[in-house]
Length: 181
Image 1 (cartoon, rainbow, N blue to C red):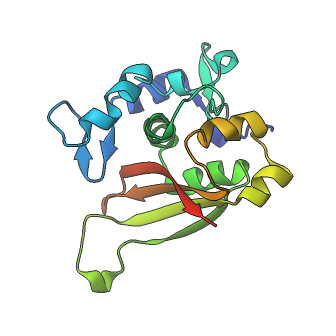
Image 2 (tube, rainbow, N blue to C red):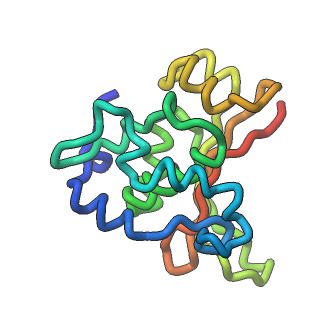
């Protein structure tokens, strides 16, 4: 996979964006947050964007954010943290959608919730879908990498990556989920 310049960022840009605190479901995840217990270990293991990249991608003056460590990131909550870090570093919903496409996710975008719902917490939503058939047929991650992502799933799911944005544009939520087929 050849890295496009949109995915290779100067280290200082990534480090500045790492200052954005991890958010989940509308709240900054700190020890007093209701989601702290599930994310505490993942936040300790992945304090920076660089910690979410493969060993050979770490160091140097720039970071290739396509070098996401699918094999080394362990568990759903760690992926939530790392996706948030990488996507915050990418900075743009359009670049995040392109990042998902680089890994063969089928990308869908929209506004959430619809204006008729009267809720203003979210703005844009981007989801990447990857079915089990696609995973085994054209995996850019390799069987072992995807198995790490599916370590606690006992069926053949569709993997869903979701990024939601605040109405002002900042990333609010990054998550991995599964749909049973």
